[in-house]
Amino acid sequence: MKPIQLFDPASSTYTYVLFDEGTRDAIIIDPVDVQLERDLATLREYGLKLLWTVETHAHADHITSAGQLAELAGARTAAPAGCGITTAAVQLKDGDTLSFGHEQIKALHTPGHTAGSMSFLWREHVFTGDTLLINGCGRTDFQSGSSEALYHSLTQVLFALPDATTVWPGHDYHGRTHSTIAAEKAGNARVAGKTLAEFTAIMAALHLPKPKRIDEAVPANLSSGLRHDAGGEAMLTARPAQGYAGDVSPQLACQWWQAGDAVLVDVRTDAEREWVGFVPGAVPLAWKQWPGMVMNSAFDDGLLAAVPADKKVVLLCRSGVRSIAAARRATELGLEAYNILEGFEGDPDEHAQRGRKNGWRYHGLPWRQG
Ligand SMILES: N[C@@H](CCC(=O)N[C@@H](CS)C(=O)NCC(=O)O)C(=O)O
Ligand SMILES: [Fe+2]
Image (cartoon, rainbow, N blue to C red):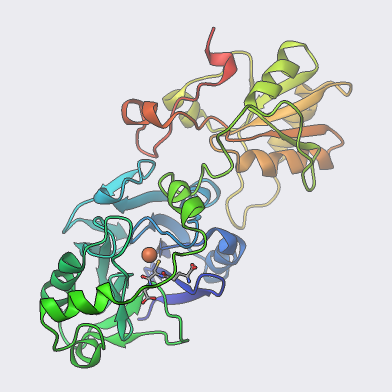
């Protein structure tokens, strides 16, 4: 049994989908935001239920789709505890396992590329993220990288695995797909047969250019990819969007709502509302659309009953993903529909106290302040 290996050409990132052949429960490792549709299609094609999204580290070169997959496919998010990805539902420690059906992966803490970096062992396969690359390894010159730590992770943790273990890297920049522990132990140009001092000298002499998207990607990835559209000044005009009237800030939505110009519809599930908090006066109307599910007529009926023809509708969810789908549907039904950016997400400082199972957080939403 082999993992499904998917490639993002823009960042040369490999994403992996593993699943239990009987139950069809699945896990995805290092999903990339711009490949969301491809990944959802893969899940549909194989008939899989996504239980987990897992990160090997907080990436510097692309943005994860973990947060979006959590919303759209119902997955839970997991990430290495040392990576500062505060939105991840499960903070993995060395040796922790995640189960999907009768299968499980085991987390191996392999610091060096970043201090929190992990590899994941599944059967006779190891997913090495940017710790071990084919005939290479992750760089150690930013994001808490350490060539000493990486040398230890490579030689003591990964090279201690059985020789026949298949190595599935987080990237390859030369079109190679996989390797083995035996091959890397014998021939990896940076580490095979090298002393720590030699390895450290090689790493110090790499002088690689900084990843192009690092300043945008790292902060976004610390929130499972959900917050890169957020921040800055409150936006007080609607921003045009594809397939619905526009995106609005929570502040603008609140102004419209309080002025009686708009109906506020909360498309989160009952469970989310209960855990995270209600928005008093909002119309609760859950948007459910898992892969393969047909149209949700309860949503249509509820929406048309709640929104008079002369009013706008502003749609709120947890992070601003489902509310986009709901706004598109509302538009098809003839309404002037807006998506509230960021949804109920928000203040990261509150997260530690409020975040529960899925990292849900209270937002400093205008309608919560009074
Ligand atoms: N050129 C790429 C960055 C490539 C890069 O730095 N990759 C990192 C992984 S995030 C690395 O460790 N590379 C090791 C190497 O190229 O030897 C970009 O601009 O995004
Ligand atoms: Fe990386």
